[in-house]
Image 1: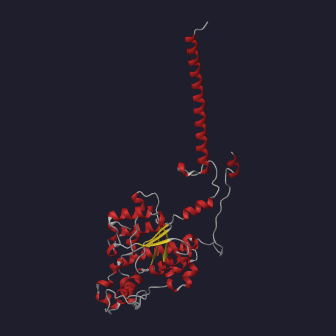
Image 2: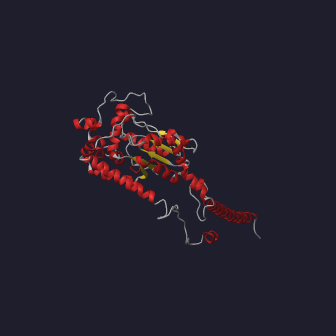
Image 3: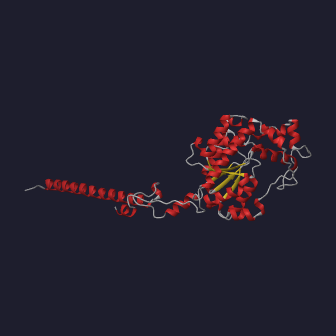
Length: 355
């Protein structure tokens, strides 16, 4: 017969086995439940685990598309005297209607290159300032490559380019007579009535072909060599950036077409741009008040300059690219807009979702 001492020992051992079994059963149930919850969150794209949906096709592609549009950042590093004020006025007119922000980049003393610490600050600020997105930044600043600073996203660059001699002549008379944008503002060369032809004949500094060296460095960037007039490296770098880093570069002489391409490509910001540009007087501002076209002799003399030849090479390069983009809008030989679609999609999305 089992004594009382051994009886209690048997009860304790039995209770211990029961406790161990219950513990393992409960733990297994919790782990399975947690795994199931995590899997469901993955399928639903739960932001708490920081991942998009997996295993099934997103149910609302339009929402994702719209979220991308709301993160737009465009930088227009406008070259002086290329019609930039007219284009910026159009953008300011559209920002309230299309619900986006426009910000002017004002650099100390109108410097075109940011200091090294300001480069990093500028890149970080634009990338992180989500409350300002979608955003359009504009200013007289050379191209800045965001990929050098380890940012997760890059802005979209756009610009306008102008025939280099036309830009130089326009700027020459602008310094003397101003424009119709701020007609009462006294310019630096006010009172100087010397024509551009006379300036070239007398070889004065204001009409020196070296002054045309501006569009190349604006597209080239913040490298020292970009600002070395006549640098072939700077010209090639400007070309590479124009193709690889700019979404669209238009021509001052064809601004209507530039605006049309932006409305078709970026309707989130430029919906209604064409109609407004054609009808609004505010969009056609800043014409130099007094300008005398140079004589053929003066033009021929300027074109002998290596600086003009290089700036003109960049202009023609940009012109060819812009016209190429224009021509690809429509089906060859017809006025039908180009379109594209997806087909032959394998495996079938519906059957994949069931599995």
